[in-house]
Image (cartoon, rainbow over all chains, first blue to last red; front, side, top):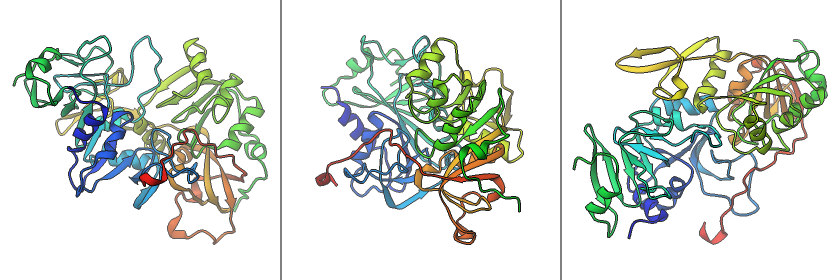
Length: 209
Length: 235
């Protein structure tokens, strides 16, 4: 059985190391916060101006002045620091954030990432995604391996407009984990019950080993 | 010192608005937006505006109100997903949009206010954002030139301010407000509470009053865009 959303998030959470500063994107990456391993202390950054993001508030405690980058109400922690948007992206662009875990529409074997626009469809904007992939230390993508039509989202070349070029380090999908290398992708891990042949068959990109 | 305190948003905007002007606005989503000044700009009827703001509000609140009355010619934003009227005007070709990466937009405002006409950034290299922009290599890495933004007027929202314009923000409502304030030739701040001089701790001023030229006091609606909660037992 391929991994479901929660299993993908749990696998992505194993990328987190004690002491890291991490930015989680919208979608499956948001679920990663639910699976942070015991004994691993990470500080979550929200690019609208917060380090040390806490969980959603208990009903009645919502604060209009306290939201995450997805505009959801959240809470603060004892470690929390607030700052403005220029400061927030100084720490992102400046390489101070250790890791970003983001969703994607397509990833190429060269580490190119497309996750912000489909030509001809509604374009909402890139938000902070381009800044994140250009700036943070390590970029981990979490997404389904194929689209609804069954076509691979792990490609030789992205077909959609890019969010960043050569920016992805690791790809976690419902079928397994792949690393971006110099000559193609390397299989790191297979999802439970998924064979290497199945992973290769679902992947358009070059897998070197 | 020239008097900075005004009674109403309309009075604070008096003499500053003209068709075709550029306005920079603070706020992220509906959090920390200058809602009173937006309402007064709508009431003024000024049009052909270029508005630099991370988002464009929702249909019936925030900058969405200016879109309803077709007062905006162009938005400079990073994300505009929450506004049906915006999308309608955009797809109909009635509204121009310049997408900026969020950090690039924040830094363009900060730089504009700091007297920096342009800066180099890695953000957007190899994407459509880089097209037509100067590329330059530093230490073996490629960067693109982005320009600072200077707005005719900037409008921001803070928690507290004094009569000299010193501002204190609250939690994530700070967001784009300080950089937006900095990039305005004239900056107007609306605050929830105007406090007496000396009431704010000088060590904890988030934006020094030199950037703020006019200031008014709330009340504010402070609408929540996405109310998200958890159950008590999962705490």
